[in-house]
Image (tube, rainbow, N blue to C red):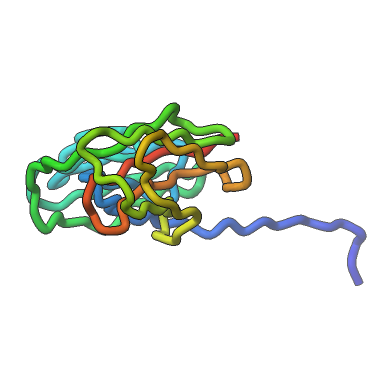
Length: 165
């Protein structure tokens, strides 16, 4: 028989961050936390959610998700660091609120297919590069978070952006 006292217990499992290669030269932690500390071969190198690897070797990230959840990622090893010469579109604003404006530069082939991907690589929007104008894409019903604008045939570099309502 109980004594009339209830104790609420909330269990929050520890989260281990993954390092995600966005395909545009950047790697990011997922999920993001309160703060991030990147390491290259054990030496601290940056504190942003994403970095651009510049050397071959082991990259790790320590992410603080709030007490008691602080975790180190498994190491990520680049398969090659190369200079990219492809063009990429630009965005009207970043973070994006409601409508994404895509400005297609002269070096980008018109009529090609594009996709918006979430950080798990799932397409959330698709379209075609217009021949004469910029594109506007409604992102009002997408969840807050990071997304990537990619070419369906890799004819231009991906662009990472945030949706924040």
